[in-house]
Length: 558
Image 1 (cartoon, rainbow, N blue to C red):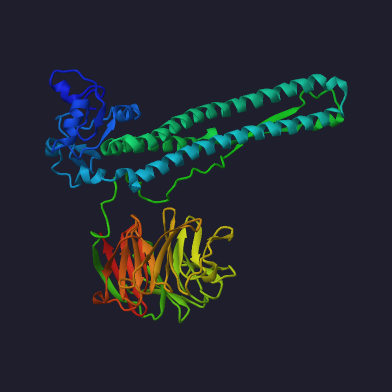
Image 2 (image 1 turned 45 degrees about the vertical axis):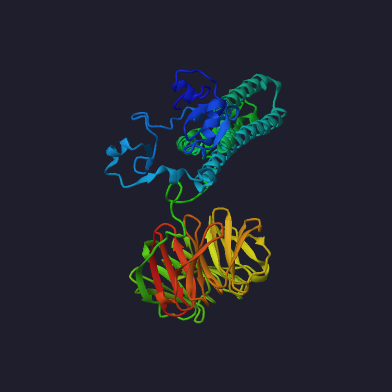
């Protein structure tokens, strides 16, 4: 902080001491009653927001201690250097002349409390807390299983003990003591880890409790800088959890015993009742991450919006296909298209030339890359989903789902697909279990995509695009036939911008993440003629658009 928040900064500069009653985050100082009145009517400060000192005191200590002015030059932060991940004042710029990522800090902190970045911080904290809890539960369960196994061994020992003479009592006692020592030793190890985890859980809980206070009372800059601090703390906790889960300390401890077979012969040579065996298996705990992406989550809010998106044509090529119902960009720059009329898929190289075709796999509608050189192909009325091995160029397996399946999208081992009368459905590709998301009837040819915890799908019967959560609750609906008529293919970028192909309007439209605004990106002037499908690759920022027949276009999106 620039000054003592309990005293009026203006009066302090005038060699007077008055207690402050409100705090102005923009001025970074407290104000007494008289100065507060002048502050509220002064031309330069009348639009500044203030909060009472009582409310300001509720902010966490680490937030109150964050400097909002440059410590080196004693000037306000006005820029943020993306390269060095730090705020800068005007004088700091001299040491950042070579940095290309200097951004007006007021743009970055604008609406930061409601930004995706702040949401990501909250969700990441929840994720870390959940992982700590799950790890604690896992260790507690192992501790209980050791106790249960101990009871089983005790029972076995007693059953064996009834078959032998009293002269083995001493051996039995020694054996029981050995078992107790082993049990206590192993449980002691687990309890030690549990103590560490509970301490970590308490620390994370305190940060989570502070989040609500920060969101309500901290300044935008305080919030932004606190987010940077929390982000680093999250990374430390994640490394802590990963280091635990990959170490021997979380191996699954098992105890068992081997009863001496000689006991059955009751010979004087028997010196031990048996042997306690301690073994361990790799921990079955899976460290969960909220997003399975190659890139780390960036705390700095995205500056991209639908108004500044630009498309640069990289390739225009002829697919030599008619009735294209699905397309997808593959790793390495290859592209795959489906031909509904001829029941085949065609893979093109990155330069647009033909690589290979696969036919005789049944009806082919949408095509979705699912990893490991595999794609899933939906089939419309055929009620099957085909899994194709692109490396071997043949059908890998066919999944019977007993429902229609049109447009589809892949996420975390699951395929989400449009099932007309049954609405949206999700199938696990591992156990092939199916569940419904929504039972809202969809059009004959509908497509779906996903972003965070949302599903966005097209419905050409109503000329609309709808967004719902994974419980089927509608969050927003977009419908404007002047801009988008007969929407089909749909995809989404890393910031939640929704790209839609307009079949009748011969265009590609982008819709804002909240569904409130739209902008036409491509039209018939760009060669679009009844475009049916498109696909946005979130790793390369490339957009593939395919007309119903022949023409396809690959764009770079910035």
